[in-house]
Amino acid sequence: MDEGTLLNNRYQLLEQLGSGGMAEVFRARDLMLDRYVAIKILRKDFSGNRDFQNHFRQEARAAANLSHPSIVTVHDFGFAANLLFIVMEYIPGKDLKNLIRQRGRFPIEQGIPLMIQACAGIGYAHRAGLVHCDVKPHNMLVSQDGRLKVTDFGIARALATITPGERSDVVWGSPLYFSPEQAQGEAPSPASDVYSLGVVLYELLSGTPPFTASTPDELARLHASARPIPISEYIPDIPPALEEIVMKVLSKEPSARYRTADQLGRVLQKFGSEPVLPPVPSRESPNDSPAVPERAPQTRSLPASTRYTPPPPILEEPKEEAAINSIDWVSVGLGLLAVLAVGGLIPFWMMVYFAYVP
Image (cartoon, rainbow, N blue to C red):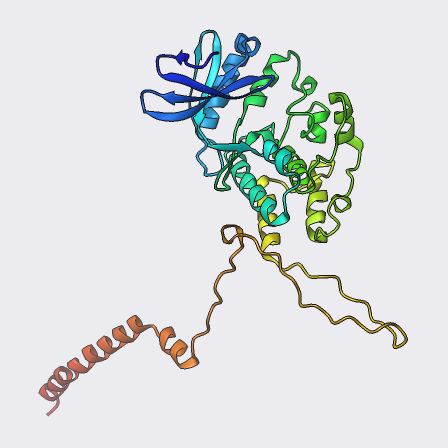
C-alpha cells in the first residue's frame, strides 16, 4: 500500500509508521468522522487465507469490545484490494521496544508505573475471557505523557489458524517473549501472558531480555528449560523483593506464577508503595573499627497515580454516643404509644366498674 491510498472510500493513508513480517502500519485519516487513526494492513499471504480471514474477524470483534484506558481501541476492520486491515485508535508516541533501544534500561521509578499500566490492560482482557497470546514491548505504545496502551489483541491467535493440524503443533507468540508452554506448542493461558509480562519487565529494568539466541528453536529451548541470569547481576542495587517478583513471574510452571495480569499488577503497585529498607548492619565488637552511624530507612516513591492508598482508619465513637446511637427509637416510640393507649382506657374501665358495683 502507498501513501495517499483510499481504503473503502473512507480511510486515507497519510504516512507509514512501521512495518514488519506480518503487517504494515499507517497513520490515516477517517474521512467520515474526521479523525486520525492507525491502520494495520496485513500481508497478502495472510490476507488470502480463508481460515485466517474468518478468525481475524472473530478476534477483531472480540478486541473491539475491550474498552479500557490501557488498551488501544479497535474502531473497525475490513477487506480492500485483497488485503485485510484493522482500524485502531491513533497513539502519538513510540512503542516500548524502541524506547528501550533508545534509553537502555529504565529506572525502577519509571519502569514500574509502565508495567502497572500494561498489567491493568491485559488483566482487563483476562477478565473478559481473552488471552493476548503475543505480549511484547512492540505491542505496548507509550504516549508522550507516559500513558501506556496495549495493542494487537487476538492477532496471534488468528495467525495460528494458518498452520494446519492440531493446536499443539502451533507455536504461539514471539519467540523472544513467549512462555515455556508456548515454546512447547501448547495453547496459551492468562499465566502465559503473565510470563511474557515478566520477560518485558526483566528487559525494561535490565536493558536486555532474559534469554537471547540466534534461532527460534534455541530460544524455545531456553524458555522451556534454562534459568535466567538473576537480574541483580545487571542491577546490583535492585531491591530483593522486586527481584523475587521477577523470578516468580519467570517460573517454568504456570501454577508457580501469578495467575493473572491483575494479580501481578497489584503486587507491583503494592511494592511501589512500600518502603525499601537497607540491610540491617551487623553488630561490631569493641575491637573493630568505629561503627558507621545508621541511616534512616529510604523509601522509593512512585508517581501518585500508581501508589497504593490505604483506606482511612475507622474512628471509634465515644461510649455515650455509641450507646445513644444503639437505641432502637422505633421500638421506644411504639412502646410509648402502647402505654398511652392503655392509659386512655383506664377511665372507661372505672366507669364500667362503678356502674355495676354500687
